[in-house]
Image (cartoon, rainbow over all chains, first blue to last red; front, side, top):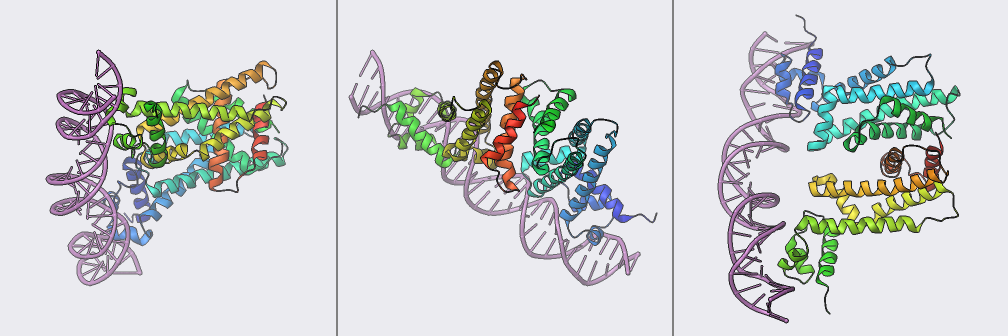
Length: 187
Length: 187
DNA sequence: ATTTGACTAAATTAGTTTTCTGGTCAAAAC
DNA sequence: GTTTTGACCAGAAAACTAATTTAGTCAAAT
């Protein structure tokens, strides 16, 4: 019972953000959930937003770890990029916190939430970029501006996985992989 | 001075929608601007939304005409697709009514506006699809699912023209054309 | 030295009143 | 007889106000 207060707070906040979103989570609630006085939270985090930031940063790490876990060195490069990206978007669409934040951004346009989601997107692109550059260096794919390619890859995937389904039958992972392979191997 | 009342109404409404958006345009205002009794509007249009629909439908026609106007038969197919798409997005970003509607959707989420913008997007995709199918038939580009290709083309272009600029130096028309050419010619 | 929760200023929400607006229709204009 | 009109209405939205909530602080407790 020498509770790592910091950990308790983060756990409580994560739970509450996932359940109610950023705005609807109060610091009193987090304190109560964490079995901690409200003031204690402020000994670890400057304010609500910094606490949020910490949690998002953890989320990004989990996301990248998920992506890394599906990479198989004996598979073709493009297949691995596809698997990684696909896993990231799956994570995004299955993780409670992500679901809640995306919903909150759409429905209430909370500024802090928009900023953090943008940050997550930037991190994903940075991760992809690093993979793409490795692929180019190894000759697995033709040289190209890695920033543009990474950016487009993510946008294309989101379009195919999320937007497409609004008016069409969902595409299979295989179909998406083939489209992306064509895109990556060309020019 | 045998005023085509219908035309007057449409002109007034277009002006007002462009200036104030859909929600902030009142039927009284349109009537006054059109020098017409309010009731008269309702002899031509069932309600506000139908009037809006008529205007959007005109806008789409203008947009397609713009796209057609930049197509040069002696140019390569992919170049023409690029020019057409580029022109459409330019139209979109320069046309007062479009600017206002996009803004209104983002800021207030007006339902009728979202629906109409979605409609515009569908029309653009349908237009592209028809071009793509012609290109495939003529052997200018490899066979592929024309619906997916059109959908992705538009999404890619919007990402490159609008989203990219939020965090990067704008891309030149040439760069965009090259990316798209690679995408269209492959697989 | 650390933790706490009562406290406060500022923001948000809830409740109420007022104003506005899409649509109608009886009367006026043609 | 047909078309046009604007006063009118019910319901929606805005404005206003009162009441509540909340992020963050800090003197006291541990």
